[in-house]
Length: 191
Image 1 (tube, helix red, strand yellow):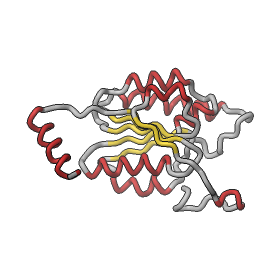
Image 2 (tube, rainbow, N blue to C red):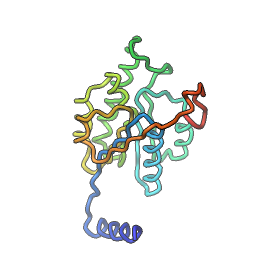
Image 3 (cartoon, rainbow, N blue to C red):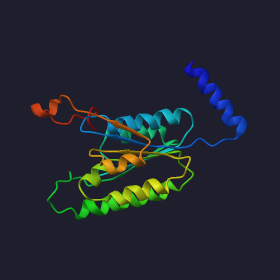
Image 4 (cartoon, rainbow, N blue to C red):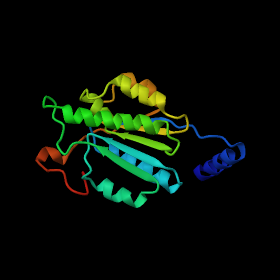
């Protein structure tokens, strides 16, 4: 039945020349899987020939997703705007703030660029949580999105004020985590 619905939808799009509306999705919560879900969406879209860009806030380039996504280079672009040092609130945040500003400006650019069907602002909500970006910045980003583009926001701490601006909100909830047993992040699993 689901496949039949897709066939009818595809036929409608071709016949009517309709443009598929893009939505604002948000993956938030204290559990693992926010970035993974967003990247999974980009990979699924690549299977249909759609172009995605992933703009990472507060993350460096030393992760498995950078290596893996090179295989999708013609359909998925990934850009990271993060220091080689973790952000620690209370420490000098000048470098982190500068990189967050660059990531935000890049997001604003691509929201108006018809080259991308899917725009992923990875960890933008974490930057908001740490007050490196404002809620009004995120509202402006959502408002700047082309109607047919899909915008995905990830990170912990989605404020209730943003709920009205999102079409889909998924909360990843941590129930148990081996991190609390002094297990460090593992290459290929956590990064």
